Image 1: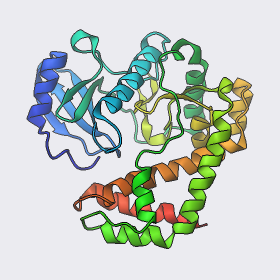
Image 2: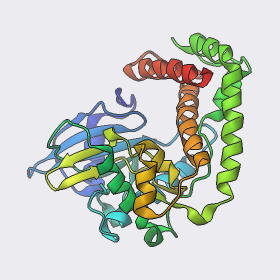
Image 3: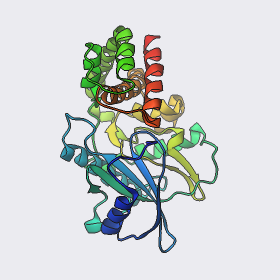
Length: 314
């Protein structure tokens, strides 16, 4: 997120790190990165550098705080196992704190701590490099199958989009009316996309024997080239799922099948391309159908809405 959480100061984050990880901050600053999680950079008093992520536990009024916390804990536990039990060097795993806990909470934010990853270059990794990590990840499935989160094909925030499609404007903020007008103007393609999404999901859910452990978002800006090789970050979306959940994003379906012997169905590729847009559109709907203000994040979200509706219309 580009905007820090309103109800959490850098001093509170530093105090939480001290309590849970016994690390004393010499300097901490908010890092305006990504979309969804909050991030901080922390330097400790002995020269160590750390990266913190913070995830809101109350974004979706239909999900309980405990449910979201359980989901995050399952994802991070799986990530830790992939790095330390399976020995996958490209997995950026969280650091255990008090009582080996990988997460701690402050208010309604769940915090996780990671070693800082120094990047050698700003140049994005090649798709083949990303595919190599994806392939190795999928090959580690059996070691984490029992405890990993499982794809459920749901879209968080979907009721908010449904309300907007019905012309219900419950939002109060700079983008409330514009969002409602945009969605209503694109009602037919959005509803068709939702229908197709659900039909594809039903078919994929019936074939779980081929599912693997997936990252969920193995895109170029979730990779870093370090001195020891490329790494993948942002593992909160890790889950057992059809391999297409990762492979569609690499664009190297044939190379993946050649390397692994696993086929990726055209339905899986279509589903995850569609799911990506609908997931984002529903997340934005959850913002714009509730009270909000204009920030760098809502500006980006609005532009995203326009692009997604344009794609769905074509």
